Image (tube, rainbow, N blue to C red; front, top):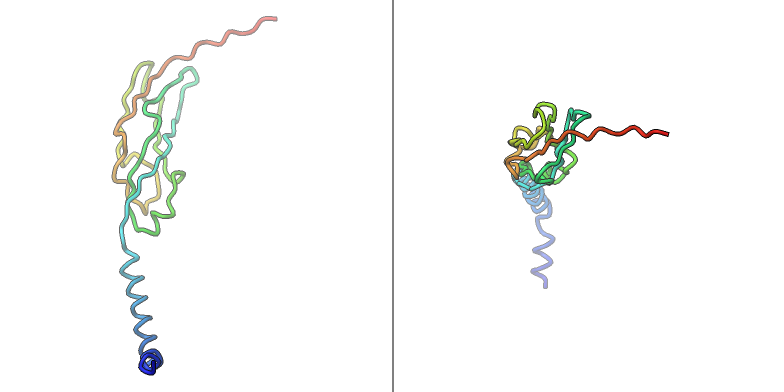
Length: 135
């Protein structure tokens, strides 16, 4: 038991220095670890004409995001969106919209690697005119 006591209590400053250097090295090297996650994100429909209605398939989009571990852990689905300009699609009918990583809006510190699915099918229809109620 005497050897164990000496092992713990001898050279305490040197042992503390070694422990400090080990922790510092771990933080510096371990902090640069890249990681990836999948996040479901919303598609934001912009400039929707008042006389049009639309349906979207599939209703859910996922992105694969890459970045430093501590930044990726803080990311949430509300940090990202995919804007789609409905007025640019033209008139009624079935439209295909390609989804690319560069079409995703999000934090610059994270890289968008992939978007699944790669396209949306949007069905545009003219809204039925409202009948005015007569009294």
